[in-house]
Image 1 (cartoon, rainbow, N blue to C red):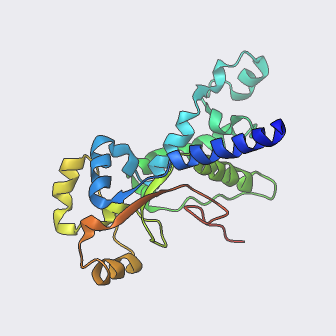
Image 2 (image 1 turned 45 degrees about the horizontal axis):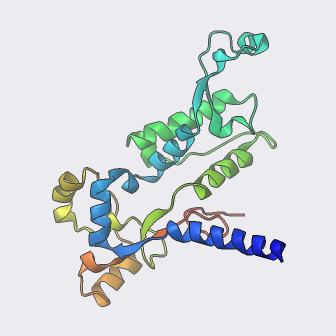
Length: 216
């Protein structure tokens, strides 16, 4: 009986933890949240970069291992703990990937490019991508337009002619346009009252194809 109760407790605690991260409101409610914490509206590159950095960063030369110092000599390569437990010997490659996300998060030229990993079979390309996928799935939920097939940023609902004013009020930069589905629903179902569009939180999920696309 005690084992059954413990099973139920685990299930109940897990469900409560998941439900505590769920949120639902309107665009107006979401705008108040962004005003309090502008980082919740950050773009994908910035989100990934922050996830990687949050795990910790150190210099490879800080190691006490003399072999490591001989291998890298005076090259101050950074080691990112986000990858450190699973990848060895490709610190320079990982540093290049992180630099890409950093530059793209600052809306540099990389933000308009696609990161393409090239290398021989077995070099770790798929494993690197899978590690990033797991990092996304373990991250905090994102706010999206409810029912949007693209799970897009609710700030896309704000009309172009008002965006400059809202950017000053919120302290964020608004990029992107509504997808055709949301544009149709806004016009036909809500009478163009974009402030009333429902907004919800969703978690990244590879299996459910939320924020992570997989092409065989």
